[in-house]
Amino acid sequence: MRSTRRPQVALGALVVALAVGALGACTGGGADGSANDGKSAQLPGSETVSPAPPGKYKTLPQPCAAVDLDTLKALVPGAVDYAGTEAVTYDTDRLVGCGWQAKTPDGSSRSLRIDMERVVSYDPAVSDEVEAKSDFDDQAVAASIPPLPLPGTSPTTTPPTSPTTGTGGTPPAGPEDGSADLSPRRLTNVGNAAFINDVASTPKGSHRRDVTLVFRTANVVVRVRYAQSSPTDATPPQSADLQGGAEKVADQLEHKVEG
Image (cartoon, rainbow, N blue to C red; front, side, top):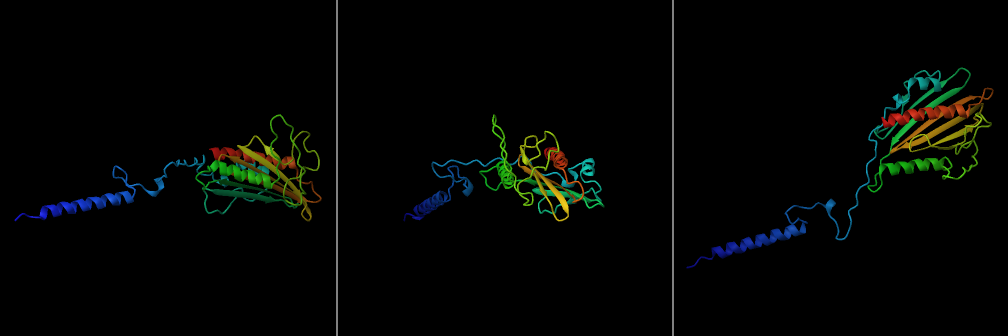
């Protein structure tokens, strides 16, 4: 009697082979037997989108050591502690800040605060630097800072808002420096883009002036706030003085970020 075991074994092997082939087709296995994951799957005719490049800067400098001691003593004279008060943040690789302040017996006071943010884009198609530029532009618009004039054109003057509103800027009451422009404006000598805003106010019993300088370098946005208040019977805070101090601090911070 002839045995039938061999045909049965061959038939079983054929069924197994067909099943394995079908499983490979369903799971997207490659021709070489390798498996494709969902991230690399691509529809026929579609194009692969390359992610935007990461930001230039991966960390931020230590904020309370970013301004040198001589500058602090000149800008905030009489401070009790020049070590500064560091801002409380949850991610010091993304956001840091520090502040200094001092008061004098006559009722005057000065304060300096710096904040540095390393901007990160969560959109793969938008780079960190583009996101930082958008953030900077939003701050300039919120402060009503006029744009830089186009090459070959004359700058336009935007009427400032009321000094008591805290928005926009107010030029000094009189010429403090014969030819210097002290109005809220764009700056071209700090970072990739910068602006300075100057707001005067008259809180009860005092004169106050707040100067804010914001600049962007690559994917980092830096804000410098330098303010002074004085009693009504004292000399009001001067724009040239405060703006010059803010620009000096910004110059140091730009080098710290790049270092």
